[in-house]
Structure formats: C-alpha cells, structure tokens
Length: 126
Image 1 (tube, rainbow, N blue to C red):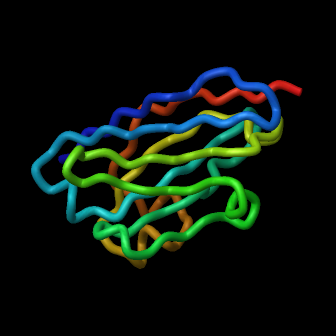
Image 2 (image 1 turned 180 degrees about the vertical axis):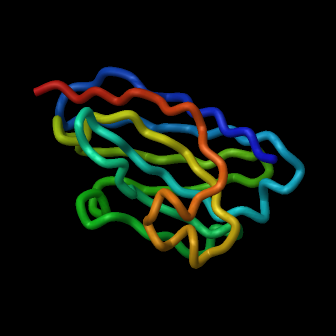
C-alpha cells in the first residue's frame, strides 16, 4: 500500500504560479506511474497529467499542457505539478494518484488509479 500526501496548494492571483508536491510512503513507490487529477465544485474529477515510473514519458490534458508540468524525484519519493499562468478555471481540489501500469496511468481515467492522496485546494482569483 502507498500513502500519498499532497502539499503546496493555496490562493494565487490569475497569472501566478504554484508548485504542488505529492510525498509518497511505501517501498515500491519508484515502480508506480503517477498522475494528477482535479475536481471543481459540481464537476467530475478530471485528468491533469501523468508520468511514468522512470519519468521518461508524460501526458497532459489539452487544457493545461502549455502551462503545467509534471515531474518526479524517486529519490525523494515525490511527484510534482508545476502550474504556471494559472487561470480562475484552474480552481479545484488537486489530487495525486498512483496507478499500477503505464497504460492505466495514461488512460486519464480516475478509476484506473489505485492510490489517492487527500487532495489540496488550489484557488485562483481574478
């Protein structure tokens, strides 16, 4: 079992930046592809980005691919989401998650992920 804990969320003005971190506990962290999802009030949980266990490939949603970057540091058991040029529509609870396979992680489907963090709130003001 892997425990995931997000941090780095908060309030930011439109156009600003935030970096979210997801710290993982568990001896098998390096073998898991990881993803970020977000969920706004009244909306479905949506895919943001994913990264393979080696960090050699990433996937990003079209809505964020020019602004957000996912990365990981397995030595620190941490995955990151760098968010630049934030917009009010980016406001959501952001979740870190781990999948079993690359195919599952890159699917962009929440049900394909096995482990989830508690979420961290990101609020972007106009």
